[in-house]
Amino acid sequence: MEEKEKLTLEQYKEFYELSLKVLQHEDERFRSIDEKATRYFSVLTILLGLAGFLGQQICEKILPPATCLEYFLFIFAVFLACSLVVAWVFLFFVMMLRSLYAIPMNDEMIAFWKTNNLLDIYNAMAKKIAEVVQKNIQTTERKIRWLRAGYYAMAVSLVFLVLFSILFVIHAWTTKGR
Image 1 (cartoon, rainbow, N blue to C red):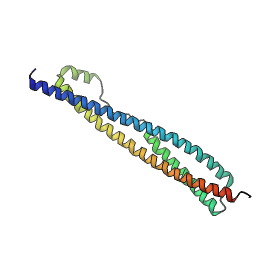
Image 2 (image 1 turned 90 degrees about the vertical axis):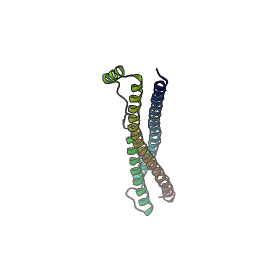
Image 3 (image 1 turned 45 degrees about the horizontal axis):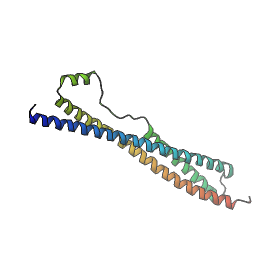
Image 4 (image 1 turned 90 degrees about the horizontal axis):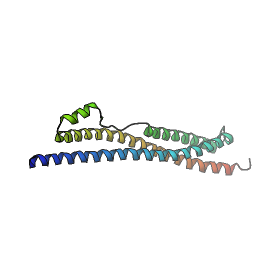
């Protein structure tokens, strides 16, 4: 093999190996988004339990609302419930099964490997991996957008929960003797 061909083969091999590393990195990024969504889902479950408990208290103590404070409590309870549902939907979209793209290992691929030289194989595989990486990046970016929206909805839910809790304590304190 001539020096020029050897150099070209080494370059294509390096290109192929680099494309594999990029593909692996994107796979890890995809999986870390799923792991983060799972953790957010756990926090959301705790928030839903707390909101359910407070919702039960609202139903027992202030429905129908009679005072301005009770109206505010009711409004914040509705906002809290809505924001929790929105957060759940966003996180559900992240968790929905969306598989990453991969290069098919089929009879066509085997025939390609048998009929081409190593230089062409490295070149073709690196190009195909680059295409797959671009598709996987798009999938991961969609998941990130849903995750970010779910995170913001959880933050809004937490604000409503804090405000609701403060109003609930004030209501309980002002109606203690009734």
